Length: 260
Image 1: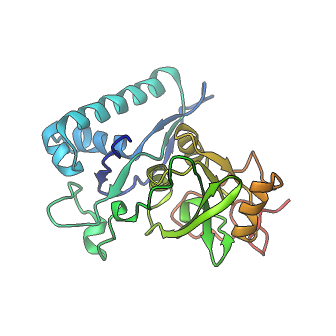
Image 2: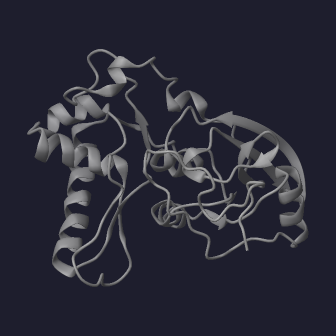
Image 3: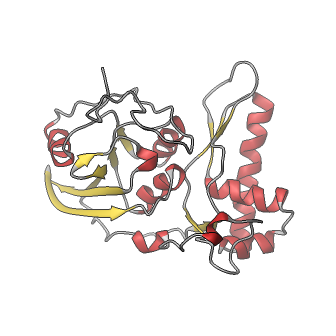
């Protein structure tokens, strides 16, 4: 079995999650992962050496160089060929404001209650012959905002039957970290309500099937998926990616389900 990839430490998620060229975008969007963004921020903006960056991100210098070169290549692709840039996903954990580990000036996390490390939230392995489905979860129902979900409910499937269930807190990871969280936990498919384009691209790159625009009871949604009768929207989207309130976003009605 392959060794799990070490989660890269970042100060906080970027304030902006997408950039577009003026005029018409050409081709599919390019996804810059949050750990790639952090390498660019530390090396090019904070003027850190690769060695200093490695210490701050809690990875090897070789890994930093690989992340940095990948990031520079993606940014060049966007600048030269007029492609939209999304910042989303990746294998990372937030620093939590712990003393001595954060390189960002004025880190907001240093003034907040330290968070539980994302690595501590990794679930038990699902097993080689099982499939794992994740559902955005709140009070037994499918939560309607992927990027703001406080919990996932995980269902392990074997032979068209649910053989295991677990609920895990996201600890406020944010939309960028969630795709990496699902990947780290061996998720094969996601059932959710609204979800933004950057997160969708990150899930697709991770090989995670998306069934969005779903509402109602989470257990019933998984049962319907197993029966091949799940009603979902293949063109689901969510335009609410700001840090402000988001009531009734993604076309929800008053019951919290996507409207027609």
